Image (cartoon, rainbow, N blue to C red; front, side):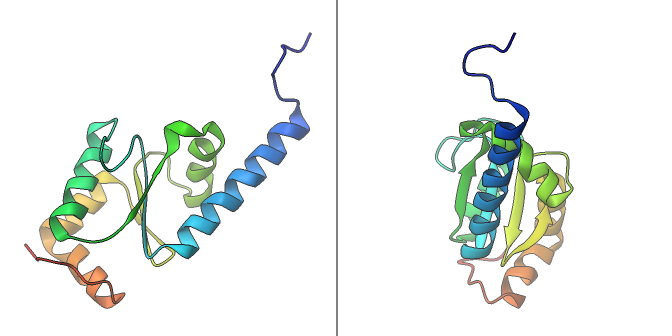
Length: 126
């Protein structure tokens, strides 16, 4: 017996296709986008919070997408990037990485260089 409100296989597939289109649109229409748990103003996990701190420190304008608001996006982003964890940072349509990679790149100055190479202005450099 199917529970009321449960999605059948076709509905689940359509939901995932819609989520993938939303993700693709966000990645392609924003110079910097962070798929995260929570919002930039209120991160809901420490890893998302660390990436928010780095981006805020650098003064980089970015869009935060709260994956907790949509289970389809939460699952589909992992398939989209072929990366198993959240947060996920994208710059000019390119997947950069999660928290550890972003933090290591920042500490090495590579993240700042990536932004410069992509024509994204940062307010300060570490």
